[in-house]
Image (tube, rainbow, N blue to C red; front, side, top):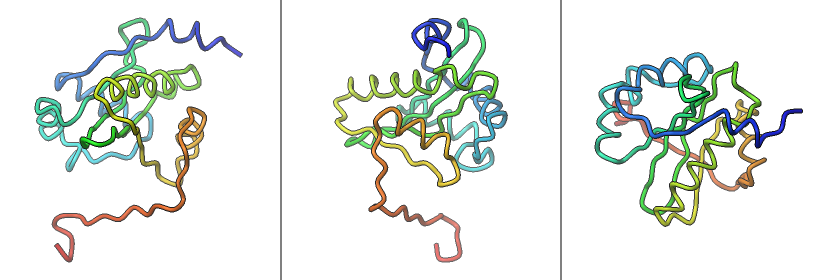
Length: 154
């Protein structure tokens, strides 16, 4: 087993901008993360969110050159949300996800957010295990409901 402290030394994290969005989409696709490139994850829409400050994208880079993982962060004013965390398959189990979570938590702590939350689909056992391993509480008493604009009843 590798020493996670040494693994972290191979990776650096920086904030991404709209120029990085095609690489983010490519990483999400390679990682098998479901996303909506023609909808809410469309490049122009994501670029607008980044410019407007309603979202932050962090990227983990291997030796400062290779994008190894990404996470999309949003802040609703009360709590910080960790969204769309993905790690390239070739970099999994090297601490990249933990590093991105730690950086997200630091960002939200700096903004005075006392709660950091995430939503994970029930099929994504690896993400569930990662977040629980980092101290996140699984809540089974909350239901996620949504209404999609343009849907049959909208």
